[in-house]
Image 1 (cartoon, one colour):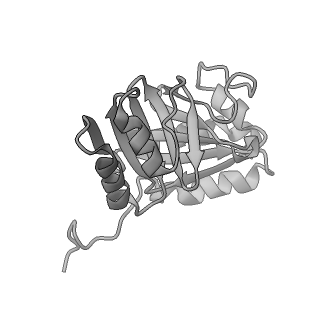
Image 2 (cartoon, rainbow, N blue to C red):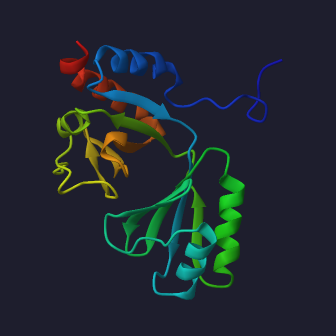
Amino acid sequence: MADTALTAPLRSPLSHAADRLAAATRTSGGAVRLAELPFLTQFNVRLDPKGAAADAVGLALGLQLPVEPGTVVRAGELTALWLGPDEWLVVGPPGGRRGLESRIREAAGDEPVSVVDVSAQRTTLLVAGPRAHDLLAHGCSLDLHPRVFGPGRCAQTTLGRTQVVLVARDDPRAGFWVLVRSSFAGYLTDWLLDAAVEWTG
């Protein structure tokens, strides 16, 4: 009997590239680390940052939604990325979609709020290692020096001509998250592997 959408196991957009990412990491001698972080829970949240809902949602999530442009707030397993003056991306571990959505909606109460599950829209690539900045700089026009784009920073930008959300992790050794639309994930993975050749041989 053929698998159906209800019974088929989840398949990440980059499951076919896992071996190539692992091989690049192995052959780089520790210079770069590349991996997919599939199935992260992702919700786009829009609300008035000065309204009652902002504080209530922050309290329910255990973190304050960041109000400074291009910043990230992290608490426990949740991360909130500033995308605009009234827009955030809340990222959590796989499998937390229903619980996270209900927490946000219940906290907002009757206040106007938009909560959209975009978990299937993007996948996440991890780019880490001592050469992570150099690798990303091959295709990103942002200044990625830690003094400028250090831990706790995020940006909507392009990488290898692909629109991404780039996140500098808390610890510089943890590298970057690159959130990319699933339909472009294969292309971007090929681009990253090609750009990393100088370290992976």
